[in-house]
Every structure is written in structure tokens, then in C-alpha cells.
Length: 374
Image (cartoon, rainbow, N blue to C red; front, side):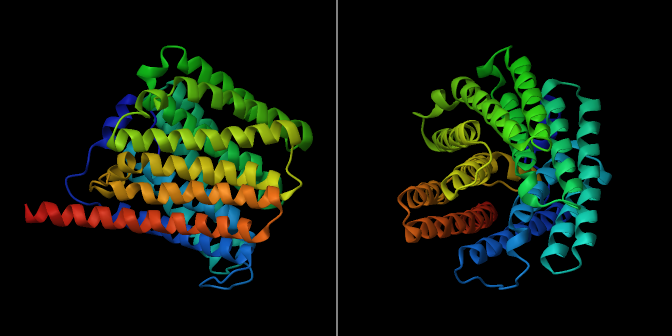
């Protein structure tokens, strides 16, 4: 999903001369992780789901974050490194998640997940050795956060690991934005990125010892990231543009706003103990911010993995608008105490991600068909 340096980006963004079947297969496994995580979400909501297995709700967070997001990020990182062994990471991560979903004894899936993130972190280290720049250092830190979460999940509950998972997503995306917008952000971007990342990592680890203090410190660090990104990223420059640039800027701005709300909640409330704080911190980070960033970067990143263009079209706005509409309804439902509104918003979030998947497939297939006709 995210690149590490100017040199590796040339590799990541150069479309392959022909579709790479292995990469497409791994991306499809990531898609299965997504579908499994969404099924688990529907079960948690108490509505109909295609698969009603009782063990799925407890896997929702990990399958969506370390499973789906982790597989996509690891796949793009492997493509950037250009080494065959790097593809072991997304393969292990997807296999681990799907084995958990299939009901195989959890210890097997959890250990497989740890192995996947060991290789994942090794890929980041290899990228750092190739290009020892600040952005890659921060991505190494993001890999370490994910690895720590995978290791600790063997013995403690996922609820205790939420901030480690959030750190993984925030660091990964912040490093990406610092690179993509390096001309806009200026020469101070690297020290700011490293300084904020260091504070974020220390705060995330602190939550394992003193959760209340660590969560508030983490929230302050997240707010620091949001202020920096909103001010220095390309949002202000492109929000009045047209086409892909406006779509991209809108997705970025909406994501930053949700991340800011999450950071503020952590800073003021600490660990969420009520539903509204949980939705704002957890779903604000992983859905409002994380998924919005995936939608923003999809037309740029997916061609590297697919070997085929993912063109921007006006229909690309539909899943993005559904995503943020669902988030607004969730929070309104939380604050008003109207369960139906909250549940409706949650279902809309699920629909948004399904629509994103369907629209992406349609755009890739129709663009290829048009190329063949021409």
C-alpha cells in the first residue's frame, strides 16, 4: 500500500508489462480477509451475515487490521523491494488470518501471523538498507508495532492491543504522506515525522504498562500528526482542483478529520469505556482514517500490484461518500442514544467497503476491455 523512498517508488509505480498472477492471487487473499472481517462486523451488529460462525466476531479487529490491511501493505512493500522472498510476508499474513477465520485452532493462526510479521519487518529493514531515509525508518517502526501486536495477541486480548494497531496504521500512512507530498511539506518534514513518530511509539508502548497515561499521551501525539498533515499536506492545494486530485484531497481531509477526532478523544477520555468514545477512537482511526486513506491511494498504488491501471472515474466517489456518511451516522446514533441510527451507520460502513471492492474490480476490468478494443 505504501512506498518507502523515491528510488523504490519508481519500482512500485511502474506498471508491470503483464499482470503478475502471483500478486493478483495474494491480493485476492487480502480481499477474502476483508470479506471475512466485514462478515464478522455484521455479526457484531446483530444483523444478518452470510456466515454465522460464532468465533468470527472476536476476530473482527485483527482480521481487518493485521489481516486485510496488513496483507495489502505487505504486498505493496514486497513489490517495492522486488525480491521473491518478500512475498512470503503477505502470503503468511493472509494464510494466518484465513486459518483463524476457518476455525483452525487459534494458536496455529496466531503463530503464523507472528511469522508473517517477522518477514514483514524484515522487508522494511531491507528497504531501509537500500534507502536509509527518515520515511523508511518510520515504516520500520510501524512494522515493529504490528509485530508487537501479533506477538502479544498470543497471550492477551485484542482490546489491550488497540493502540499498537492504531500506531501501525498511523505511522504507515504518515510516512507515506511525507514522501508523496515532500515538495509541499518542505525540508522540515523529515525531522517532524521522526519526532512525532518517536513520541507516538513511546506512548503506544506505555499503554502496555499504564493504559490511562499511555492512551492520553498517544492521543496528544496523534493530534500532533493531524495538525502537521492538515497544514503541510496537499489537501489545501488540491481540494479546489478537479477529478482525481480533488477526490484524493477530499479523502485525505476527511481521514485527517476523523483521526483528529480520535486523537482528541484519546487525549481527553483516555481508553474508551463508552460506546461513543469507542466509535470515535477505534472506528474513527481504522475506518474514517485508515480506509479513507486506502481509497485515496488506490488509483496510485493498486496498479503497482495488479500490473493494470485502476482509473479514476466519478463512480469512485460513491464508496468514499458512503464510508463517511456511515461514520457520521454511527456517531450521531451514539450521541443521541438511537440504536437504529447507530446500527444503520455501521451497516452503511460495511456496504461502503463492499462497494469500493466492486467498483475497483469493475474499473480495472472495463479499462482493460477498452484497451483491447482500441
